[in-house]
Image (cartoon, rainbow, N blue to C red; front, side, top):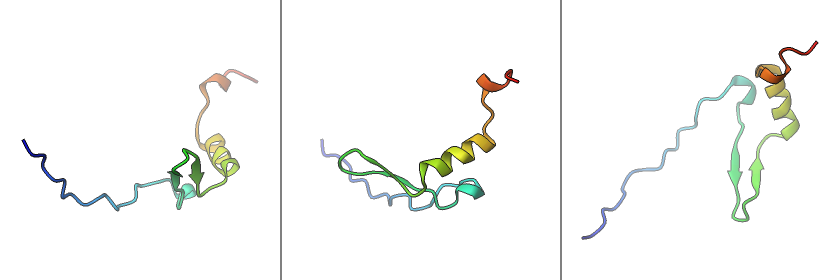
Length: 60
């Protein structure tokens, strides 16, 4: 039995992101290395500001 061809167009629409992370893009190259359009420190600052850490809630 012959396989059907997949004639669907690839999804070129960008996902919605937080306004502070607008333009963030992540790709994996042929060597398996992660390449990001933002510096990891900027991403960590964003996460520290916006995400509540359950483990640190009870600390004073």
